[in-house]
Length: 386
Image (cartoon, rainbow, N blue to C red; front, side):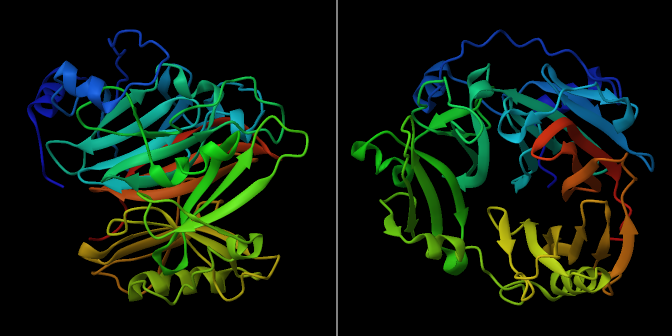
């Protein structure tokens, strides 16, 4: 986590703390950029446009995910009066993923936001890797690691409206240190069914047994067919499975393959709510993609969603509910300790949490049914004893 480069040093010499700087990148044509094109250009990374140097303290720094990139705001109550859009078309933080010396966050309809290492581990450089408009007409859903790079699956969501955008080929965009824009990459498993008709991959996740599961759907038909697949390797074709197998693919019990500190945190969180837990969404420094864990009480309709983070190096584990309350454990404080993130306004919720260096990062959204209004992320100096 201490890796640095000349770009980071330059940033520190010229940026004003906590001030969003206008990015001077050129207008990017809305067409996929391939790995071959980047190699031919001769970029040397990281080639991402920096937008801010962050040094958070005890008081949180709030950022809104705007159309022009992240905007520093006083608090979520000061967010712009964004109209509620059905979530497939709204701008929000999709997920988080620890990757090398970075924390990557794809933004629906925009591109990637990345926190990178700085001169000290209580600061971070914020980068924006904009898609140049390519992502605007598609939904960013599944965040995973492909070819050792964070990658996002884009698709045309037809649940609310019939899509007008053309089918996207390829559907996956990866974050690459040598490119200032996300790169279009081919994932063979997700493209192996294309010859059979107007199919598009919609959802991909790592399921029980370490297998990959993905859902594909026909587009542009009144009676569109949905199919489900499973594969041990995304470099090869998948095997078709039943809808029942698909539904059970995320059924990984919390007692399996997780550290004692994380298990203690989840148990404490489950016992703190009358209905227990319905699902745990985990980000781990050691696991290459976010994963879902299902407690034994998953069938309980009253269970709640829990966002968890774990880092084995210092036995740090934490978890929060959407209201920001949760528990943490560390090597210095192994017993589960209650804590709470800064409170959010009514109708706002937290949607993820992670720790980067000594900075706590949490994404947030304003929600109304299936719609999302304002959205963004918050950074705070880590309150945990490490």
